[in-house]
Length: 398
Ligand SMILES: Cc1ncc(COP(=O)(O)O)c(C=O)c1O
Image 1: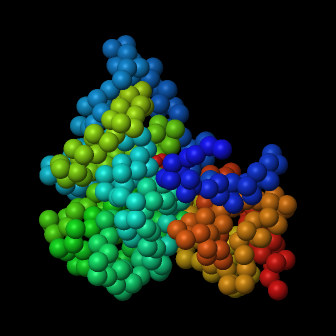
Image 2 (image 1 turned 90 degrees about the vertical axis):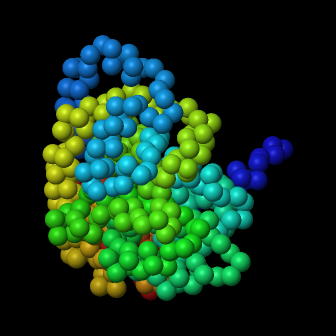
């Protein structure tokens, strides 16, 4: 009998993985993957970058690099983040292997078994798994249409003798809920965190992917307004704005935290892939990012509009949702008596897959929700796929 560590023993294969094994038909329509469609990647620019790289840089690309990151990428990213108003002169940037590694490192830096992390319910499954693997005590607070329930947050932050180590939030186009925080909630969080030792981990994987200039001012990171009254560690990623295969993200943190995180990263992988760091540097320095972002915003906005149209056309009136203003996801609310796992089983029989609500519930319970990603499938699949899921829901509703 193998004796796993307590940390790993707490991790279980999720039901969703088991259900997905059923989804093997080659013509299956998938709303499950929270990633870009392969046809959207800027392959021509990446080819062009590689073809015109001096040999010297190609050799650097194949070599180990410094733990904090490929120095020219750190410089280019610093300028990019400065352009977004981020406090890059008072904080340090650590390049990470995806932003998931930044979240992992921060959790390792701050969380002992039993320590409390406050997070949103629902939340990003990758972070939930990390928090579980460090045996954190997760306190999950419901999301509303404009962000976390702040009266509940205030209550949890001020409970005597708890001292949460971390507040983990995804303020922009949350995964899975698709919501963006209102300015009112952002301001309220600043007020209630002032003077607290709890650090705010601001996960901003989707902030650049707004569909409308009107929402752009709301996507400004909370990190930009840091005022010394509490600590904000900001995580960003190239995954949704260039390609997840590059495995590149970053952490922007105060120098003291950065130093600890750099040592932790050294023990994890020494450095993030130098090869893709060289490519990302050129992508930024040759001015390719902004036009590509404009293309992505239009593309995802079109996909979102299509999905909304077909949801309106096909879903029964008791299925509710908020139309996202950016990002990748629709988050459907179903009546309490419907179970997303049963709907998924039926929907797979018909030929469409999605992710069930309880996958994103840190307590693994609430299951009358469905996450539909519009980022990944072919556009022509959206209508037939939504119809299949709507039919599955109708067949199961008593
Ligand atoms: C909210 C959120 N944070 C972080 C990540 C991790 O992205 P990566 O590690 O690829 O940068 C994702 C990926 O789906 C995400 O949705």
